[in-house]
Image: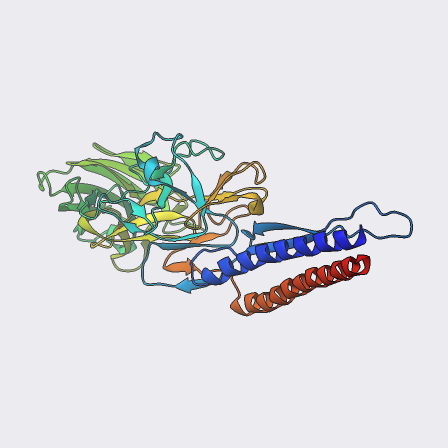
Length: 433
């Protein structure tokens, strides 16, 4: 048994070192492949039951696995939709066949990085054919998540390069000061006019004018104003709304709002501090603050509209697409307006190294990996999504070449054992002759 077991063990040694040579070849060949995870080779000994006074060689077994949990270095690129994951987590992608499948039925694969670009139909895909998936945003930019342990709701990301968009104004912030002296007895009572640009539903620039008229008393100071609002998209001579404001002159909250009384065409929410008005193209909320904590003040200074802002944007053409660290894929228009198109979640599984490795640096969920869960990027255990970057291969050329030398020596040593056993068997044969 001794010589034959030695021969068998040496043959197994040749086999396992051939396997290791294959993994080394794969690792070196993919040393420049973005997102590649090196293959690890693990040897385990095999022990046979031993008899008294003798030893039987058992040999060796080999197992291989991809070290999916290993993190490659990030390299900067010039493409905004080159996406990497900094930390744990993987991007959801699908195949070409998934484009024509229903949500929830399309195959979902995972990858750690991808150089995505739009194809002829606007889908973001890698050159190897992996299509990025995400949750589509609603019209207001919010995201509806159907479920985090299912691929239902994930859609292939599609972006039309010739899309136009407009964002009508919905909110105006009125941060300003009006002079306290204007409501003193003897003042001329002249109004202060403030034009504010807003955008209608067609993306056209319109003007909303606010006229602040002080209420001048016979004696003392009234601290009261009447505000008339005019919409130049309609009749600029007739106010569409009006409201009255009174300011406090106490020693603690002097100059802030004391009370707001909405008039015709206006509403006031004392909790949010919003004045609601209706212009020709829709409703607009004007934020002025609440009593005791107001954006609109009356102090002994000049008329100073220093904090007047409005949202909305004119019609714009898509100029770029970028992804944020939280996975929000945003369209950037030539007007400077940004709009969320998709949220790209990051998938995580209990045993990352249990994923099934497929072509093109993609992985599939298996029984060994456990079920996936879709996290918001930057939350929970997962990392962040980084644009303008790709993840390098985890192969270390120097380490692989060292392993190559060791494997070659081990292979030669096992071959030498076979040669030695053969010579010993030959000697035994010669003794019989």
